Length: 336
Ligand SMILES: NC(=O)c1ccc[n+]([C@@H]2O[C@H](COP(=O)([O-])OP(=O)(O)OC[C@H]3O[C@@H](n4cnc5c(N)ncnc54)[C@H](OP(=O)(O)O)[C@@H]3O)[C@@H](O)[C@H]2O)c1
Image (cartoon, rainbow, N blue to C red; front, side):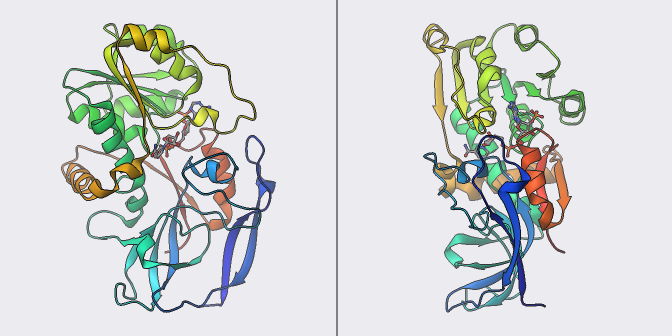
């Protein structure tokens, strides 16, 4: 092992859509670990839309990065040195703050062990990790689907959306997925067995929602916000639940977008809207992970990954995520 740690830093703060110049690859020595710490060799990075918030100074649950900081994000790695009895060399671990680098020093309280016998280890940042738990708890606890309900999910072929739709099917619902482009739409109906899809880039969303949801929408799992959400809110059913998971259409705006006034629809349909962050369910993750792992084994849940090779390609892949270039859970394979 050389003593070099390749890292990706935020070189300048993005304004609007991030560009490659906002990132820089640097090399620094691999840090020494202190008593109680472990050194992790990063194998997989998780690229997630919320990380755009870390790059801005706006109020957020995730701390802002400063210029020059290593990009912080979820990762899966192998323990290669340890100064705590809690971890041994060779353990596979997942951590939310390991970051875009080849080696990370980790505090044991911020990582967890991954069971490699359960599924491929990168699922610890996918279907059996944060996106999976977001879909599971966000749909079941916030969306509260009832068998027979019509569930609409946006960004439907993505890390969270693809799982939301499949869990809603397991819960006995009709599922309509909204996604960008023909290929993504065919995938969610043909492979994932959603009941219908709407290609928001090429189809009239209002008309298609009317066609596929003649009795209105009982549950909307919102990953995108903006105009897509305006269209869905206009067609809610009585007592509908709107689970506000993400607003990716807004993350790169420099000025707030004027929106629809939704309250009339919320009032007349006696609907509920609730924003949530997956961390509120942290105490129950073990339940969600066990259930998701069982569904994967039974073939009831499939998951699509979009794998990009090489740490140095993370910035371009992240920009792609903001533009809908990813098709499934976006991962960077850093090392074997
Ligand atoms: N609340 C929480 O705790 C929590 C946890 C995890 C994720 N999230 C949120 O959940 C959402 C989905 O995350 P993910 O990890 O599953 O990402 P993802 O869906 O795998 O990837 C993002 C997708 O968003 C779509 N998109 C990008 N720009 C868009 C725009 N302007 N309008 C409409 N769609 C757009 C693209 O799909 P198309 O090609 O289909 O447009 C893109 O592939 C994000 O908003 C994220 O912030 C929230």
